[in-house]
Length: 372
Image 1 (cartoon, one colour):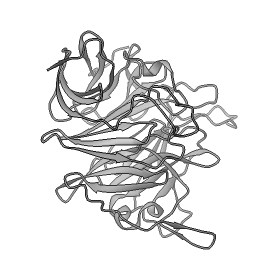
Image 2 (cartoon, one colour):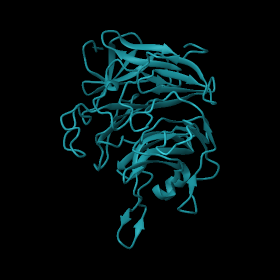
Image 3 (tube, rainbow, N blue to C red):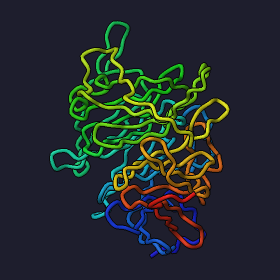
Image 4 (cartoon, one colour):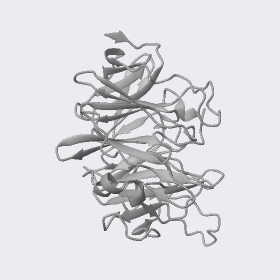
């Protein structure tokens, strides 16, 4: 056992099977720790995950601490340098480590794309391998299920799109996933993919979401059922009538391998809500989660605590002291959100959690009813 008191715990995420059990990353290792303890059991060394940025992107992260993120799915944990080029997939049962990487092109502003799928009794990992390329791997064997030729020239394109992948969101049934990314000039664009279509047609099968965006990828987003997802919208500069609806619900009604390249997915419904403050550019920052037990949304905001919302946008509960654990987007390096006192949310166990120096993981349950 290792005592993590006084150590720099760089990331924490809940075990999605066992309550009150957490994976943490510190000193180049993945460890497991119980709530309220600093004593941790080491699982694996992960040597390719760096402490600081060096030689990537346009240099803005040179010598600065890299944010680390953990993605948990049953016995699997994927560790990523969020704005770096390295990742690793760990089997927490046999403690094997498979190193991953993505090609560097503006990696310092694009989150490392990672997601887990369940298909035909197998666990699959979606992982970014290039700025505009995702691959799907069999988690157990490491086999790449999406090997293909990518070609772009003045006269021909094959399996190629001009699109920067970023944070991924996977539907509960694994049949669809979203990339919360961007395109030049830059402007953020969410793209929707059918898993089955992607396995054979790759990036060109994606459909873009139709709504007014700006310089704000990795915006708050979550699935609320297998075919419905919700995005938090920015305030448009030309919104002169004051009719600002912050939540947009989208329904995936058809397979997303569209037969028309110009197809866009339109919002099904716009909902009045104002829990996400807009910054000086009118942009919203933070995270959205869905609590299936209550049918409510959980919003972690930029400077306004956490909110529990009905799907109609009504605030059911407000926890003003629940602050984000990590920068809410690519534009907030070095912000207060990267402090060790910040909180994250574990949907499967319905708890907010954070690493508290000296005492370990602290938990706060999701309020069941009104608490303001």
